[in-house]
Length: 329
Image (cartoon, rainbow, N blue to C red; front, side, top):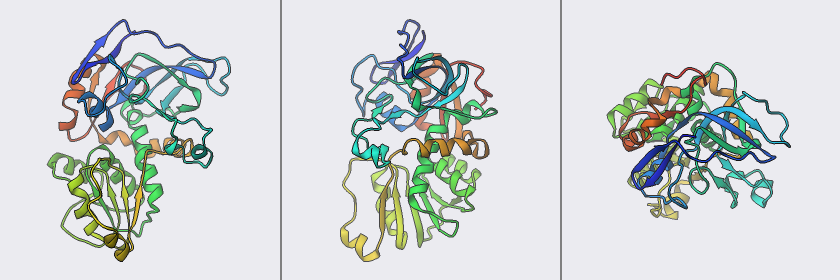
């Protein structure tokens, strides 16, 4: 079968002889319709995160149709359209049993510590293949997983319609946070140096940055270390600051900054299984997260899709097979 395979840093080749997946008794095999690209995929592509081996199949934001069902799987049918939840928590450890599956130390992370889904067919645990409603575009389905990430961050923030919100960064996560906030009746202020990304955020209902302060809720989505301190400085006393973007730098403030202003710092890591993902799926038809998509590429052009993804104003996805909703970007 065909697959897009990372052969060395910065180089992806589309091969025609990748091994077919094996369907275990608790698995389903999904005929892939498409895969969205995100920052962690690009980190692998550019060598900032090293895969366990080469060649390596990247990608994790996938959707498709069930092509095979394991002998012990119930509640799934052949041909059913599903979105993949690409963080396979063990569901047995202390963190999983408390509902914090996002912290599972045994989590299989698709495309990072287990092979990704940029292939014509993939096998996965059936619990992590979520049925989706009819009528969604391929772009919407390619954005289902990052939409769940953004929605979980907003859930954890406790934001209400009365909050004054600042969104730092208008990459894919920032755009999706803006989209969800506007659906809650909030017009977030967004700060973003890339003018086309800023325009995209404005089309989703965000307000360009005018330098105001006093935000009661701040979402840092960029992962750009120098952006964090200015964002915290603009938070109101008692505000909640939600950290979504990742970087390895020390936090640029002291406990004095946090305690005296009574700030709440909240990290938000992906989502918790299954509620965050299933709740996000119920909103896809109304939210239409595919509006954050800018570009679509076929599997054979995966190299181009990856190489220039960080320069595009919107999100990129790769289509693998037809018939999975509308194929427009």
